[in-house]
Structures are given as structure tokens and as C-alpha cells.
Image 1: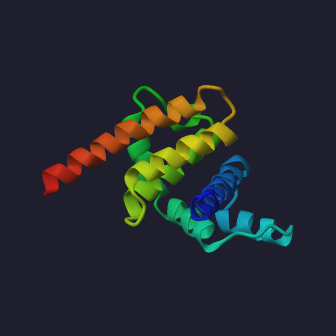
Image 2 (image 1 turned 60 degrees about the horizontal axis):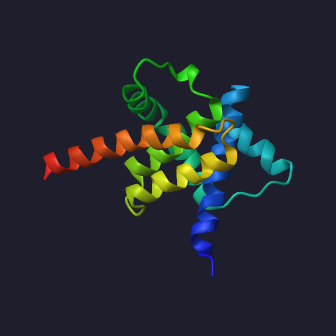
Length: 144
């Protein structure tokens, strides 16, 4: 029997990645993207909207962590979809205390398998988030 909460949350995360992708690709405000999609008949749950707005609000900090992690890369070199899968996972890791860090990583990898445009996208996502997870764990140990 599938864990419906988990699959529902994964769908919410996928929707969040897609909305953020659209905003990035079209260079439009996220609220306009959401509004346009709602007018077109799309429906989003509160978790999707929380993630999207959380990523948008904290994008500067999230992108800094991302850039500090992927050495010798620019943000523009990371595929738009991959960049947004990473942003969603990093947002969750930093701001969603009720979600275990490993769950955020695992969910991002699963989403990368579905939405990623390259065969090695899940591996790339895993590598980047693995480094971030390690850094977060080290910081938690030193702050105790």
C-alpha cells in the first residue's frame, strides 16, 4: 500500500519545481505565474504554494549556498530544471524543520528522475545535496 502522504507531497514538490522553472524560464514574477496557471485551471495545494513562496523569498541565500557548493560553476550553467529541484530541496533543508533532511534529499533525487532532462541529473542532484547535507550536519554538531 503506497504512502499517500509521501506521494501527495512529492506531487506538491514537483508542482513547486515546475512553477519555479516557469518563473525562471519566462523571467516572470512567481505570483503572476501562479495566477496564470490558476486561471488556466491548474490547482495547487498549500504545501506547493508554501514551497514556491519560501524559495522565492529566500532565493538569494539558497543560491549562495548552491554556488558555494558547486565549485567552478555559475548558476546559469546549471540546467533551469535542475537548479529549481536543488532550490526546493535546499529550502526544505533550511526552513522546514518537520521534514527530515534525508527526506528532502531523497525526494529531490526522485523528482530529478522524473523531471530531469539528462540521464545523470539524479546523480548530480545527489552529489550537490550530499555536500550540503554534510555541511549542515557539521554545523549542527558545532552549534551543540
